[in-house]
Image (cartoon, one colour):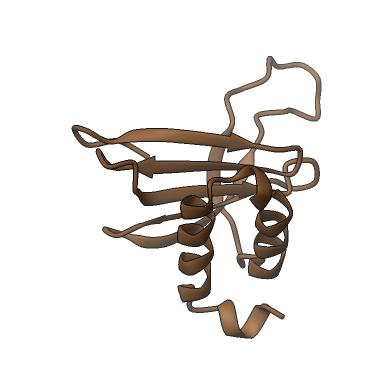
Length: 120
């Protein structure tokens, strides 16, 4: 997520998720990337007003053959977004997330086209 002039990034992390939020000069959230299931099969949901939602898997750069150095993690095509899982993880971490950020991300998750189908 690149930043325009006056924008900053806030990075919030827990064992199960990373939430990177772009904020404007007034410290209001304007875009986010929610990386979840960090200990299982990490995936990332990115939202910004220009492109909407993009879901990806995280290729950690680990190699099974043991003959190569670890590469940098990259985002790859990621399949279906697990919105229920993201919502649950965000709710569990929300007491450590600023209320305006939690409300922004939750609101955007509810706008995802698959939200009604996959969420409780």
